[in-house]
Each structure stands twice: as C-alpha cells, then as structure tokens.
Length: 313
Image (cartoon, rainbow, N blue to C red; front, side, top):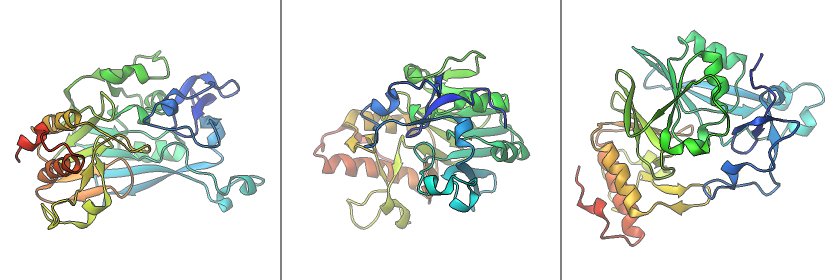
C-alpha cells in the first residue's frame, strides 16, 4: 500500500504522527509528555506507517444490535502471521497507539468515521470502501488525532476537530481537509458532534439516533455493564466516570462535569459507545444514569454543593 505520509514518525505509545521522517524523529512526543498521557518506562519510541505494516493489523467487528455500526481496532500480528525473522523479536509487541477503536457509522446521508486509530492498511481501506467509503471523519480529542491526514487523503474526505484543541495538532494541513467546529455542529443530517470539554477543552461526543458515541469524554466503567436498570440498588454504584487524565487518574473538577451535562441535556440517548472495545451500554433511562453517575462521582469526592446536584432528568 502506498502512503503519502508512510515514512513520517509516529509515536508508538499514543499513535500521533509528526511532520518529520522516522529517520529523524522528534526528541519527544508532546502528547505523551502532557499529564493526561504518559511516556512509558522504557522511554519514547517511534515507528511509521510503512514500518508498522509487517507487524500490525486491524480487526473489524459489527455491532450485534445494529449492523450499520462497525468497530475497527489495531492489534499486533501473531507470531505465525509475521514475516520470517520477525517472530522472535515481536511476539510480545503491543498494538500501535493507545488501543482505542474507530467507529464506522453507515448513515442514510453518508458514512461517518468516529475517532481514529493510527494504523492503516489496504484491508482497512477495502473494508471501509466496501461499506460505501467516508463522507467525513470526526475526532473526539487530541489523543485520537493519530494519522488523520493520511486517512483523509486515502478516503478523500474532511476531518472535523474542535477548534479549542487546534493547538495540539502535530502536522500541517497542506490540503485543507480539516474542518474546525465549536459547540455543536451537524456533520450530516441526523449526526451531530457535541463539544463537552472536560478531558480536553474540545473533548466531544457524537449523537446519532438515540446513540451517543462518547470516546473518553465520558468513560464507561465495569459496574455500568452489569446494572440493567436506571438506578442500581446501591446508591454509590455508577455507570460512568469523568477524568481529566485517565491513565494517571486525575479527576475532573465539579464545574467541568456540570458543563458536560449542560452540553448533553438537549440530546436523548439510550445507548453509549465508549472509546474502547466492549464499552457498549444499552438501556432505557441511560441518560439519567449519566447524571446520577456525575452526582456519585462528586459526592464521594466531597463536592456535595456542586451545581450538578441541582440538575434533574
């Protein structure tokens, strides 16, 4: 497969691509140096799209509840899939990037790709094109910007990113494919990107047909997958959490959490799709459980007078 940016340096930890060749990578990845991410204990390492082709692959899954929704994730090739000579050195290799999923939505007005993974190959291009190609790519926040200019080039589509996070972009947009949004914007009829802030100033969710694609603007938590009712019996059980940094466990302050709720209030939803595989929650009353999770989060943190306690659903 031919890439326009195949030899540009990519951070192996977060998947961010930079405008310098792999032969002369940056001294550091500013995404990973930020307190919301991390530099691994072994230090900063680099790759490129071309260098990743022999060791990585993408996996495709379809939502069992909606055949129009597809999940794309990256995983390392197994030893038996690797080229001769690579198996011994790469058998424990992790996936390129953070491990998030891209979500393909087949809408009546064109396909939308929500969020991105760094790795791209011909089977991925073929899979998406067989589903009808892309009308637009929409990215929730800078941790998932990855190789978005290459994706836009391959599919001939624009990329929507929040203007409040423009300072985190790591490549020049020579072709003008980026579309900056602020607040709320309808990408195609029925599909709306909603800026919530919090994790990043521009952190966003995507709303479509009573479904909310939340990335990690809101994070699904394990107890939320088990509890099928609006409110569990234990008043401190939550379905979602709200962090400024997830890997480093730094919580959001009350005002930021309240702002997320205010952004979500106009939208109805009965399903949420998180940024990672398995983070699908479907049930009536789910919007109310988001609000109750906010209240639990703040109550346990000692913020009983936070403004969100005045909200009702």
